[in-house]
Image 1 (cartoon, rainbow, N blue to C red):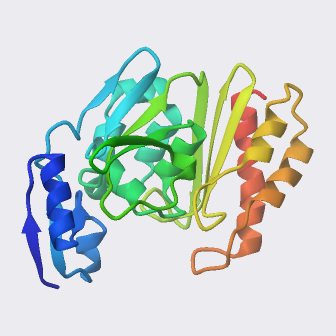
Image 2 (spheres, rainbow, N blue to C red):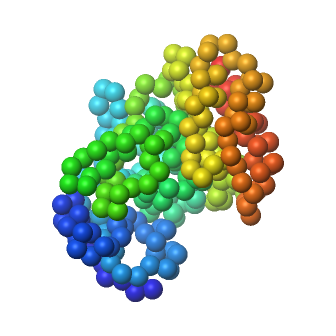
Length: 259
């Protein structure tokens, strides 16, 4: 592996370097550098100000793209207001990775097994990106990014009075999720998201609507969930196992939410 490292101090500089070199943006490097498969130009975002903060206003919490999982895990603001995200951060990888890996880098990997993205989808989050101007995109609609676009933050509404996250892996938080699930509820509005059950983290719209009726029929909700998810067989788990675990996690989270 060989590469040239660029260290811009503004988003505009990073964008200009990307256009000139066709390089790859680098957050913490826990994916790109660990894979040892990258060559060419890397554009580090670490020296750009304003990308690490965690701030709130009356309606939402804004998490900078370079905030680490350790930052999220140790944020009382997130633990109080966004418990599903806090639980997902705590259950992601091990302490060494959480100390380095960033929320923006994790989102930008577009992994269907991302614990944090599952929580963020349930919490109806938006991702802010910069490509010369700023744009907000619903995280559930974010399947890819234009090559020049830089993830700058994720904005998570505080409206959900209850949220929770669960995962099943082969061992513990150190393992990749075989399946994960998050739920968020507020005044009858329910949002359910599932990871490892499709090519991307899935917002289960029909299941969410069935749980938002005010008179939950758990058996019917399970049937709807199984019709929405599309798990695969891989080295982490079989299709049948993922489907069985998914309905078990749904029942657990529905009971926790008091639906």
